[in-house]
Image (cartoon, rainbow, N blue to C red):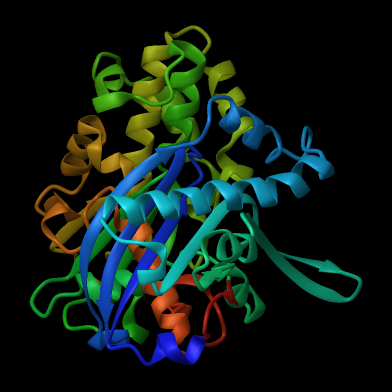
Length: 391
């Protein structure tokens, strides 16, 4: 079956993604021909399917080591896969196709824990990351060849397992004439450095810090809303300078790349500390300050770790943060002189980018091509990513 999919000149591939914000499942269907730098694709359908009511709270409770239960995690691994499989079938129907016409699914899964820092255990140096939503269950539930567990292969060769988007940034967004930064603002923000006319070994990337994660948490706490739609709450508040200065002193920002982060660093304990320090100010002001921090941490990452090697000319933004005018305006303030725009005018639309990424990564896996970027993850070598599961 794998050989049959490999031999096709054109493949229909579903990409599935749910990020650290854990709001739902992004699903895309693309048609792709070729692989690597010779790959070409076109977008057929995209949608986001929210998780069931109450599911996010249950999921986040089981992402916290203080409240997680082993039996719940075991069940969640299957349940998330069932929800992902349903999203795949729904996006296939939306595109007017049937599962029998689709060749491949690439699934990121749902991150439960990301531990990129090495720890010595029983004589072994261990890094780890855990994305639940078994690709084997997705394959059986859809009848479609499925690739998942992309991050562990990079971990196995000394990498942090993240970010993985830079490979697709290189394929799609590199330019012959312009030094580009590709910034994705999901729960976490990550930036890919694309010098003009670069080869893959000249690409670097890292997580700059929190994207929407802190903003979403504060919006839920103070306004009982899942996120700051249109950045309207942040636009109505005021920055709290001492609080922003405290956030900027976080040691993650000073750590040299390659580096990646997640809820383990900027999750519930960080939010509680932020609220405690800003307790004399309104929730609106806290959200404004957190939104400012997202943009400022991106700029500081550029100033400290990129600008000395490459002076950027363009900043291309994707992810949910690209839909937040406050964050986009702040980025334009910090990156004065650069062309700051979204990826909507490219083959990677803002909302669909990460789902497209995992569809293309699945195509690379089936083609036998390494798709990690050692300059982004710190891996000692390129490697083929993912686990292939038969239907």
